Length: 476
Image (cartoon, rainbow, N blue to C red):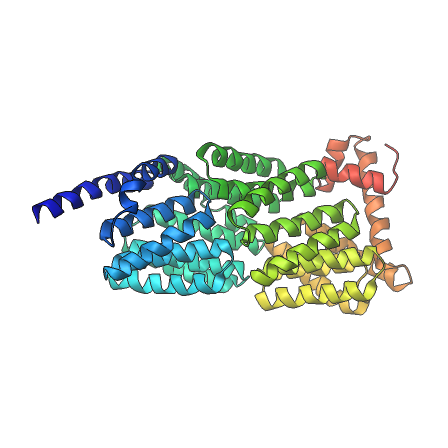
């Protein structure tokens, strides 16, 4: 018995070192330690230590972004903990598998594992771990576009964090809630508390969460029209992800940076960043959320470049991923882009079908922000009859005012202001272009041709203004 006890103690000590490194968020060091002790553990029979070794290996690989590699040790950990009838071990393995399956695009298995994990953690009264599992369920619902359900589980997670007296994780949950706010277009609410979270996550050395704080901050700024600060936030996320070797976070940062590049007319930079994100995604998570988003953004990029056939090809690739992973908000945005492409190719029936699909999706998600944007996009490209659009545009204007989006308010106001022209026979798309051209000419005149000042008056970037000047063939 003494010999067995000494062997167990010898096995437990390196695991304690790894666990300490993980808690200190020193993930690369933890992985190196796991690699050094792996030969000793590979030869072991079922034991608590062998289960813990596999759990830690899966956890470290997942947090470093190696989703596929993390799956096997996580499954082994669950098997070993079940054989030892360790309720706590089973619960944490179920939770880890739930996280991994979300990133791999298997939402059905993810939900099942996470629900079992929550039940297990509550059984052993580990409220801190229950909060984390509930937060992942909230994330799962946000992927499906069900932000109301996501908020519900976020609230449950916060209640568990309070029971655990975990003030820091309460801040993490506030950062998670910011995701739901920005997906709903509520950029001001998304900003609330992020500065405090960034300070505290840096103090804690929690770079995994810290990076997502910077990404949330960047996207909230982007939605609010503050593009220069948004870029700084995204570049900060790229810098920290690269430094800490968190490749999963790095691919997400590249994706958001590409979205900003497209908005600013930096098409070459957007393509470069999307290719980086796709390369990482194909290697570590070929069926995960990043692939859907990247291909949808690649479609948006080709649309902005007026390469409509290439845009539709990219959207088709996006749709092939959506079959495996039903991300409703991404699906709606994809169909919206397809609708614009079809209009540009003079394929009205296909455009109308695409826009109708978009509206159905966002209505089912009860996402007023995306619904309002779609109404404006459909109106500007002339996809529907004026009688159908008038009440939707009036409603959209109220949404933009509520969420404080002056750029979108201006766009819908221009449409409403030129409805009479459209009703007198001028196509709505042409009416919008005429009004847009006049507005740019006036801004350039008032600023004596100063591009930066004119862009500021118009509420758009320099790149976007240069693009419109070229499109309307204006002399500067």
